[in-house]
Amino acid sequence: MTDKEEGRTGEAVIRLDNRLDELERLHAFFEEIGARANWPDRLKFDMTLSCEELLTNTINYGFPQGGRHVITLSVQSSPSAVEIRLEDEGVPFNPLEFEEPDLSPDLEERRIGGLGIFFVRRMMNEFIYERTDTGNRIILRKTI
Image 1 (cartoon, rainbow, N blue to C red):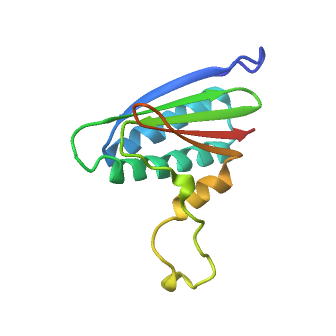
Image 2 (cartoon, rainbow, N blue to C red):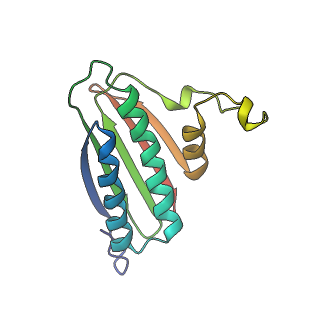
């Protein structure tokens, strides 16, 4: 993944089906990358949780027509930063268009939804959305 001695950037790619049971593969993917790149546990947690949230949204809402679809996740890691790209051919969905949830009400009184994207925005240094000719692309960047 990453050769820290020479400062080279490594890349890893995983293609996941639009099924929630693929989240197990996502977790194993980040465990392997984190171990090879010697990431701190907190970085592995942040990367895994962010991608899990975004993938869950894509799986649940991105393909209303049903059927099998592939979501591609690529990770580039260097000694100073991590970049993740999530790409799918789902319906247009820009998570940055949604307002941050109101956290002031008690838990029982809060609206359901929106917290996952809120947390991803807080955990990452950059969160970018692009609509491509074929679908959605989300780019996450985190400084190590």
